[in-house]
Length: 232
Image (cartoon, rainbow, N blue to C red):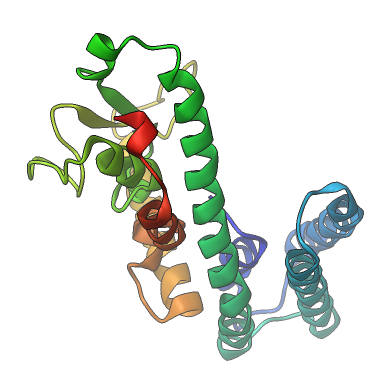
């Protein structure tokens, strides 16, 4: 999961302190065009007025920052960090609301499925959550199913994982694209972890913030409020 601010940080971090070459400038210009093209689509969403204002602020701030970088033909480390830190408040709010929305959507679907599954089968139901390695810790779906099962887990993995709730780490490589060498998937994972750590420190002053499911806080808070009585 990538926010625009995280993508911008990752795009520019390796260019700090050096003049931007033509390829990087062209990439920034293309990214600005993409953001500007996306902004009108916000009007067709079901976001609240407060949420719409926040998303527009995120996009406008991103465009303004990128244009500043283009005009200067360079970006400095502290400048990029100030942009990242300034954007972190809106990112955090988006993450909390996204987590709550994910928990709500999952709960609504489970209520529908519960009416279709006989009691005997439901009492022995098992869940498998698919996802990449990084968001496994504090995974919103894992937290939800753990609450549904009333089982905090048995210590075999992350919180909530058990014999009835399994998290399957999916490969980062496309299923139909075999690696060119046996270490490619491992190296991609290590690179992702390193980049997430650098971006996490810049945005949240916490190198581990992006090493877990970033919507987990909002999901956890909403899960505490859900009524699971109809799912027992």
